[in-house]
Image (cartoon, rainbow, N blue to C red; front, side):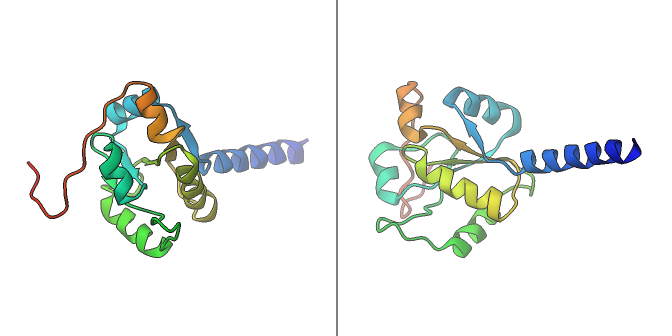
Length: 146
């Protein structure tokens, strides 16, 4: 009997560990609520051209993961991500065009690196704009923004 109870608690603990490192999906409404409650680090992983073409979600940080050729430098990107985080447990929300790239990067962070509190915007910027949510044009890197 004691071994069954012990096994149950071990299974329960392992289940919580698995849940903690799962990639979460957010709708635009859920992202807005999270922004108001927990001030997550919203990271737009699209390309520079995509940012210029459509704009970005307010208060999001541009941090290109895949370049126009589809290549990435994961270690450099992770270093930049760590610099953007205000605290180690700050929620991170990844954004891309349709949710495909952000899901891949999110899986890398959660499954391979064991990071917690990682989400991605389901349907990406396309879903955001479909829900009539606003976008801001990014600040040109060579000009001072006010």
